[in-house]
Image 1 (cartoon, rainbow, N blue to C red):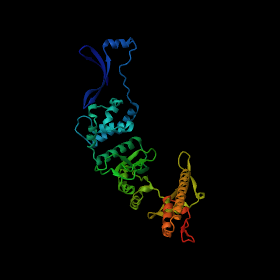
Image 2 (cartoon, rainbow, N blue to C red):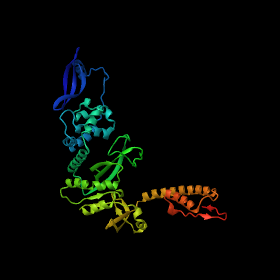
Image 3 (cartoon, rainbow, N blue to C red):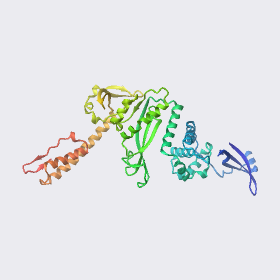
Image 4 (cartoon, one colour):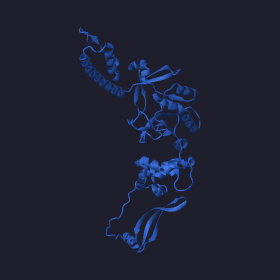
Length: 407
């Protein structure tokens, strides 16, 4: 609420516009604007300002703050966090700190030491009571430390449950996947989650944290998430989490009917498929063409056009085979753009392999019989294997009349 307040200095009386909000249950002024003396205010009202330039202009970002804050309040994010992680009612709550950090991360990610500066550039003070002296980086870390792993998981589940309820999110099909995110944690700092692993962002020298995520099919809204050590194999992670995923979805469903979970081939394991077979739920997985070379040889004439979305179609071939101990439906699809990319890559690899084999041939010729037949065959095979073109090239190694080997 805003009001005009009269104030006195040593030499004059002046007026300010004060914005108030409740802090710890008590009304406090959180922001104020200087108006000037009564004479100046009257002069401005009558237009007698002599076109005086403003002494100060405040520009605050509000649109994105307003939109995200509205969603956060509808979901009850601060309330959910504070219910799971209560603290003595003194100053800002854990929920306040996490919401501010989340808004900052979404709109203009900065370090925690820069959050005060960012808050000053926004209209956040209009939406929640702020104590700027409490926005130092150490206060954020102190409040984050009040959360343990179990609390974080339960908070995420509660927020997802609220989103499902508010938006009436359909739960017939959910999509599951994993990824990892690099961080700058020192390699000597102990951590259960942050590990050196193959980076999906190409930052292999940095430590990473794994994220398992299940989202709804239509909009990709997160319904379940868990952090895990990034060096754990995807199949091991999903096998460990599948019961929690189903529990989360079942808690949000009124009719308790089965759902369909979609996942990629990196999550395949006999134990996971057996567990899914025993449940009332369905699944759609994927397999590497390496395991089904016979299906890769099926001609495109045997494919049929299948509608996917917005009138688009793709060629697909359907059959049944025994996989993981049971007869299962298999659908093989053909994507023209993917095929062209792979064909181009293969042609590039073929040329590189030929160039390297030519170099190897010249070196073998200069070896003056020092190489054995087995050695040359092995070196040539290493080259073709490196470029994945072994089955596309015929390599002959012959012994000439001078008992020298040539390629």
